[in-house]
Image 1 (cartoon, rainbow, N blue to C red):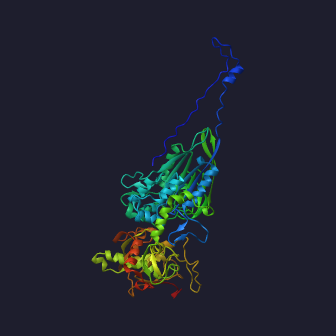
Image 2 (image 1 turned 180 degrees about the vertical axis):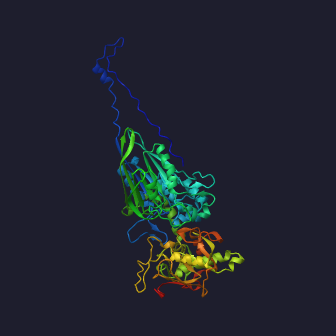
Length: 605
């Protein structure tokens, strides 16, 4: 979308009344008092405003949560912390902010990951796709809420560039990505920034430059969708280019919306030269930034200050969690100094929408779409012979995980060449959701979607035995070290705050122990294939999702390994097709215990 046109300033022409005695032929002279009564002096010019305040409201990582609803459980969302989800509730908070502060005093911005994440997002990308004429519910909701801008998130690219472009067309606000470049021209593939103007009666407008930055990891995580089409340089590098440009355009306030966390970490190891969570580095290293809306890492940071190392100025940051859990509120106060607006105060906080009702207008606009998706996810695809739970999947080899592994191995095996089909085939997968459950009896789409919550596709990669052991050692750092003889507490066993569940791969097709009494790097024991110890030079075909195959979470060897299979079918759809073809999901067809936790050789469970 184009940058807003230059402001057309309105000038009030000044008039003057002399008050002199007028003499007109044929008439009597008019006294000064009478002249004043007949031609009163105009009201004096309004005094220019010397101070002004405005706010920028921010959301992030909405992941297609419109309503306070859990499509996987088919009921209203609830969690132990009492959170609500969805932009419908956030919209009510935004209305309250606009009413309290004035419509012209509020801007609304998002930090990305909008169109993927729930069954609603999947439905309008794959079942009734927006590329075939439907309207994305998130576009409808965000247009109604009058967003001013949104940064691109990495999950915007999950469904391909065509879907993203169609979503962009449906939005009445720009999708910003100063570091999303055309691979051939290296020019911005999306608008880098937009400039908004806060009207101030009797004074110059306050110009607010909003710069959007996305995540360099897109180059890895969605390699199949963007390779050869777009490139994604670092946030710091591109901010250094565009922040001075916004200042040169006369922006009084420079605000960044970053789909990037603020701890300087990366989950892709050495695969990319750019930092994944770089918002703190942008604040430190790029002068001229006033505040940053942070996203990507799904945490709540009400207010965080970073000092710019060149200017010594404080940069204000805030991250409003995810899914509509919170709304960030940046409040700015400015003073007009010699014709220029200067920030005199800036603060940030997060608001919780769980105390307000959903916006009735959004409910009216999108209730039909919602009901359509509810009906879809409740479609039965088969039956299950017993209840399959993922509750213990992070420390035990459970049948529900073997279901994923079996589907992955069957799909890759069917697509291998004759030569590669002769190699031993294994699978790796992560426990995405500890709350997933496939019940005994009817199996619906929502049951499978609740187990496999990401829109991943499938790869076959070659790894040697030595590389496979390295891979599993990397996964085993998921666990805290627990010395032999010490009781294992599952509530504190995992490093899930830094090495999250979705990052932890377990393998099927090989057998092994994970000795949590040992230090990281020395935990994989008794690695065997068909009862025989795996040798360093043995070659395996590994069924693995595209996120991991392209370097996601920084696993060793896998991104550079030879690819022998890839497909565009999503793993979730392959799982649905498996159940549909079988008619009944029976653990006897796939379940086996091939890995376990130990302490100095003794099984933990």
